[in-house]
Length: 94
Image (tube, rainbow, N blue to C red):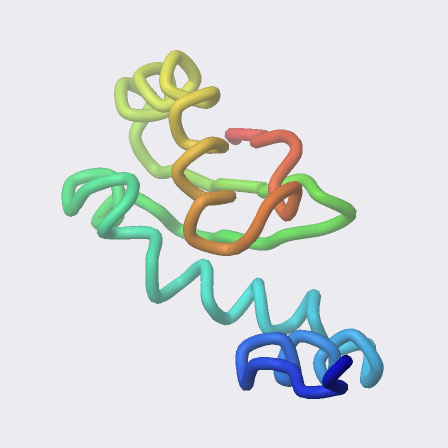
């Protein structure tokens, strides 16, 4: 039996050991937000932050805010596919 692990797993273990996984995900969300939510939503996004599995999204346009409310489930699936299972449990739009 081998004790070898993949580089991906080693980085995950390292992030978890240093307890910086949360900050890593917060940083990563900014780089993937446009590809997941789209350029129009990105241009109206004022702030993104992750706290305890909740993604807080601040938008400057009430119409886009309403549309995003309807797309929450789809966004959670897409974000978790990019960030890892269970990272985003809920999206709060304000």
